[in-house]
Image 1: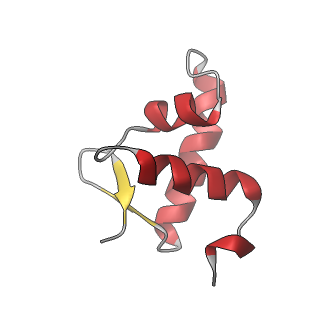
Image 2: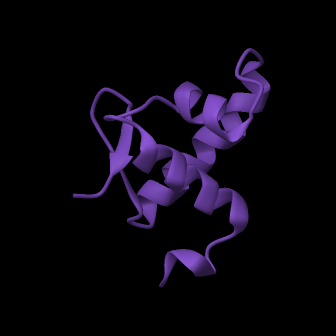
Amino acid sequence: MEEDSLPWDYQRIIAAVRQAAGPVMAREVGEVVGVDVSVRSKLEPLRSKLVRLVDRGWLRKLPDGRFTTRL
């Protein structure tokens, strides 16, 4: 499956993780994609999308909870 076939919000999430200098927390991704990170209920759907991208092999989740692109 090509990245272009993913929904637009998932493409933005992957791009935000790629742009980071290293592994990132969901809060840092939220700041880049424009999610109000001060409200936990707004951050949890983003975290769910990140985990979904991990489950599908697009991203990797480190043991400390940070996300990175697959190597």
